[in-house]
Picture 1 (cartoon, rainbow, N blue to C red):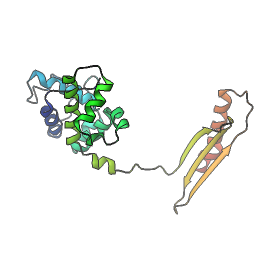
Picture 2 (picture 1 turned 135 degrees about the vertical axis):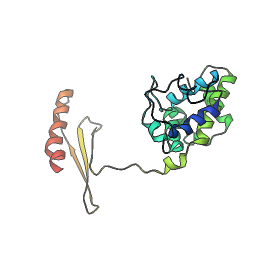
Picture 3 (picture 1 turned 135 degrees about the horizontal axis):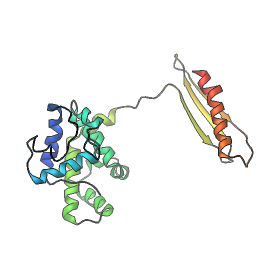
Picture 4 (picture 1 turned 30 degrees about the vertical axis):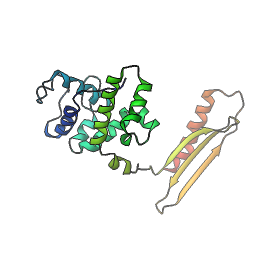
Amino acid sequence: MFPYTQNVGTLIAVIKAIGSHGVPDKFTTKELPVWGYKSSNDRSVVGVLKHIGFIDASGVPQQLWKDARTNPQAATARGTKAGYAELFKTFPDANRKDAEALMNFFKAKTTVGDAVVKQMVSTFRSLSQYGDFEEIDSQTPTQPENQDRQEFRSNGSPVVSHTMSGANGMTINLNVELVVPTDATGEVYEKFFSAMRKHLIDASK
């Protein structure tokens, strides 16, 4: 079930106001009147904040809440992408999709009536319009200097791959394939990988 609120204006106003308040122990419907939002329709805002990861199920502020204190638009974009991951998997540019496309998606994923679906769309679009997706999309993930992974060939032979980056920019890829009996147990594989890490990967650090 996707969250929705009739008062999308309150939703965005609360996010904008996070930076002017201290981090509460919990943010629940009881806190809304303290912040100046006394309408019963405002209570659904809390459910949306949970969905986008600003608070957990019990209302405890998470890292995105803290991020929103200094950059609420970027935090909103990150939370929206995470909370609506299924939508963004279908439409990578979901934040730019029109109402009709979003209506079709939410109708296919829920059993609620059109009136509720429209509110789901309105809620998502409000988050999308406020969130700074360009900023988070432009951020390049930091690649670790050394990477290793485990995989298996089609014949069942385990392979350990390790990538090392030198100070001069040189990258070395080390691939080691092991040949084991066809009836080897999972414990045997674990011992192989553990030994490979100890003698080849950890030793190179």
